[in-house]
Length: 135
Ligand code: FES
Image: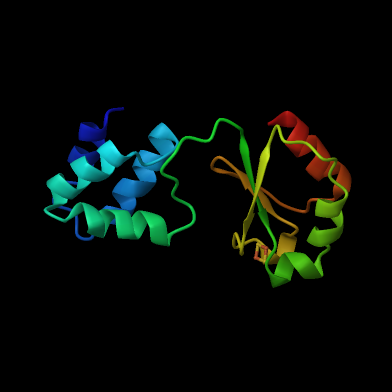
């Protein structure tokens, strides 16, 4: 899907910037400077306004990430369920980028993680290792 298709999909929508940025990130893996310029033009915003939103939210990146990403929740709920112990048990491996997030909405079934749009719950050390190896 091209950026123009994403912009078309959100045309006329109220508050389209975040949904557009999420779609761009999902489609291309990051929000490029060219995309920021085109989004700003389409929404009649300045590039600084769009860039400000992109840089405010940690989920958006402006450069591509070559490695697979696993978002591991380290908020209180998952801490109480042992996420720090299973994270410490992971072998050192730079093949997968482990990003810390704070709550995936799965607190009662944590430790939880997310890869792409798939969430993983009730992780233990072996499940987390297998998940990382599968990415
Ligand atoms: S605290 Fe981890 S999912 Fe909510």
